[in-house]
Amino acid sequence: MSRVRLIQTLLIGGSVALLEILCRAGVIDHFTMIPPSDMLLSLIRIARTESWFWPDVLYTLRNLAVAIVIAVAGGFLIGLGVHAVPRLRRCLDPLFSSYYSVPTFVLYPLLIVIFGIGPASLIVMGALFGVVAMIVATLTALDRIPRALIKTARIMRLDALRGVLMVRLPAAAPHLFTGLKLAVAYCVIGVIAGEFILATAGIGRRLSFSYNNFDNQTMYGVLLLILVFAATLNALLNIWEKRLHQRWYR
Image 1 (tube, rainbow, N blue to C red):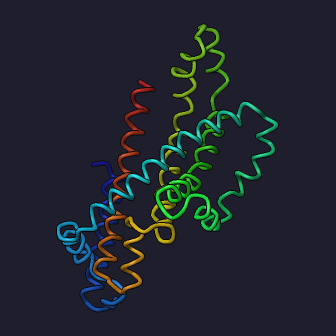
Image 2 (image 1 turned 180 degrees about the vertical axis):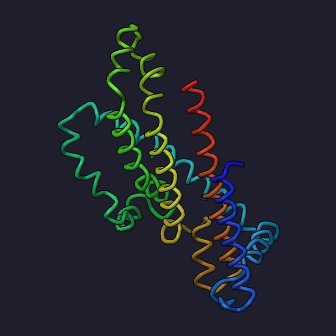
């Protein structure tokens, strides 16, 4: 284990242990937060006994997967198109820069009118959260490709497809992967948070329901599930990024 990983593990483990001690000692009121060990036990109990658990999990994962595909693929293609038309890019750059300063949730009444209360609204909400991050990352990636690599591809007489696969994509990969990770993170936020107000099912809806009913055991169990899922997804993306870079730069 590298030193950075060791420090991260100790920091997370120490934080969880400290929170456990504070909750058990009564410094943090049990009504406000339950100990992490109780969160884990609650999550296990919910997964084993509650009939709504797996349908809600699958509902959220399905919507999230579709939103991520739309945001990543759509953002990449839009980024390519905008990069190819400099005048269009000059017009859209201010919009991209200020996009996240306006809460996307202000659009939820319009989404309900157009798509209704259901999966379509959640997918669109998640995609709207993530697509601009991918567009900006694609533009940045294409801007950062060294001109020497492009000239080298021309000198070697690579056709357009081989030039993209062997030169442009490897050179742009770091920034593209940054956009991918941001788009995935924003989609997770958009879909799960959207379930608070736009859905009749899903993990976010269940979290909101348990919060409104003061059901701390269920609320913190579901919250732990979301945290573990987000951390696992981010770790998998980091592993994929490292392996892909090793393969391309070998």
